[in-house]
Amino acid sequence: MAKATQSRATDKAADTITLLKQDHRTVEALFEEFENADDEQLDAIAQRVCQLLTVHAQIEEEILYPAAKEAFEGEASEDLVNEATVEHAGAKDLIAKIEGMSAEDELFKASVKVLSEYIKHHVKEEENELFPKLKKTDLDLQAMGTQLQERKLELMEELGIDENEAEENRSRATKGASKRPAGSRSGSRASRQ
Image 1 (tube, rainbow, N blue to C red):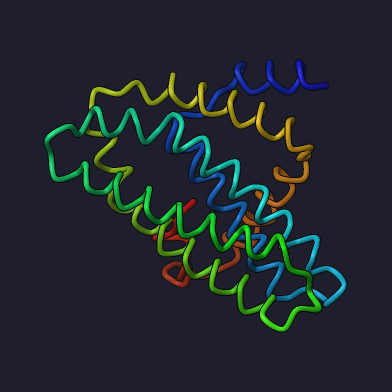
Image 2: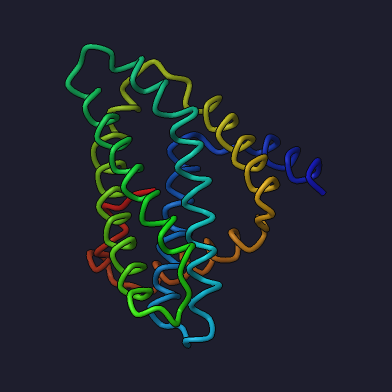
């Protein structure tokens, strides 16, 4: 199964920005699902969010951020990468806290809500500031997209994360977004990880 998934990923690899934006939409859909879920579904949704954000942050930190820092070396844009790294550290702390909680904990819903807002801010900066600057560099975003996808699949396999479920959530996010009037996508036009 892993080999088939990996070959599928490399047969039709998305470029870096497309891949990361897809991840952003998937997590946004899960946060929305969390907001509307019954209490008995909250633990599973929060766990899924935490897993996907952990993988997403790791591939960015291992592959994207070092390449971006090198491409931006000496420019003010390098600060964007440093800020994103600090934001990741804060998100990881909150993820660890949520993973140690359950829906019965008094601060569980509030913690997931704060993570959602934190991620929306991070995504907004990536998509509106970092990604446009990356497009202006000499980085091979197609090749990096393949590298990101391969590493993502490795990490998902290591963590026992079902890629198909992530694709279903992304599909729901796309359908939901197409039903919204233009300009009403508060978190997705300028969102994160």
